Amino acid sequence: MPKTYVEKSITIAASSDKVKSIIADFNHWKAWSPWFILEPDANDTISDNGKSHEWDGKRIGSGMIKVVAEEESVIKYALTFLKPWKSKSKSDFILEKLNDNSTKLSWTMEGTLPFFMFWMKTMMERLIGMDYNRGLLMLKDYIEKGQVDAKLEFLGESQFEGCNFVGVKSTCTIDNIGEVMEADFKKLTDFAKENENIVTCDWFSVYHKFDFNRNKVVYTSGVGIKSDPSEIPAGMFKGNLPATKVHTVRHIGSYELSGNAWSAIMAMERAKEFKQNKKIPPMEFYRNSPMETEPKDLISDVCIAVK
Image 1 (cartoon, rainbow, N blue to C red):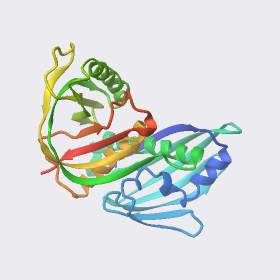
Image 2: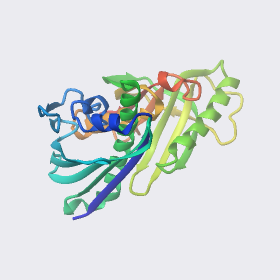
Image 3: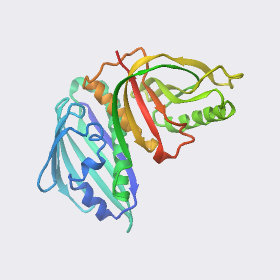
Image 4: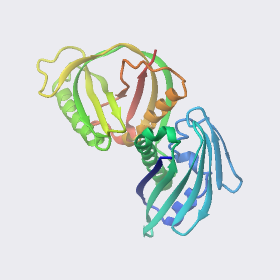
């Protein structure tokens, strides 16, 4: 059976004792979990001592996790998945004390996939790694601030009226999409400042390809226009987003946690809560340009065209 391994780390401004007390008690986990934010109403049960947690949901599947060992610098968990398929994994939190008020926390998972899913090994490791990254960022918020500065609103279906736009098309890896997209939006922001009379509030990205196995992303970032610009800068092009019915999940919080909305809407599609129109790529809309918005104030809508 194909083996999988994931490890992600973060530095938290708190003592190792404080970090340990939170990650060893499942009564804290729902507040920062990268999965329960996708399905807040999923059924779950936590043991009286806070050392085991069972869950059952349409989007996040079902399973159980329990603490099996608490050592000075590591907490070990046994993880059992029941749905969408049965499997067992080992998961650890490894703590490294940097000083009295700083801890490096590493989150690992070691498991296997059913033999017939061998071709999904790389994709699953990347998906779980993305979940772990989001979870560690939210855990850091929860420990340092006492709350997570991110939430999702499930807006359901609506009609997108379409728009003309000026955009930039890019190809990059999943790992460096953040810096590449930031550079693209810097170009679009410069264009918008020079064409204030024709641009709209429709800032967006359209994802043409998201290939986890090949670590490749192809996307277009753009800004809506009310009329044709007198000149289109080199490297940009004019295009049109068609009118379509969409299903929308809204993220409110820092841009680095906007993956919560992506994960939620993809989980909803897998749970057959709606059927995607494969002819129109997934889109992400921003209330303002990400270059002009404070991270804590960013609002983005992840939209999937539906049939």
